[in-house]
Image: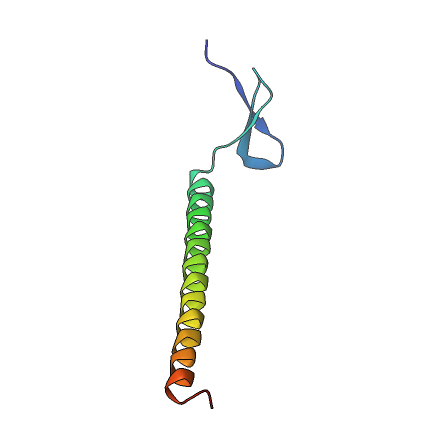
Length: 76
């Protein structure tokens, strides 16, 4: 037997499942927008991590080049 759903007062995009009292959002556009927002946030976090790693690698490379130049110039 399917669960009955009751509209939530003052919010047409929410319904209450009377079998377990869960509130369900029936606004698919809002749901999809939130999923897109979550994905964009995750993509930005991954990009930030990669850029941080790239910066750290560049710092290491510059330090290595600096040491080699110091050896070549006699440590001046």
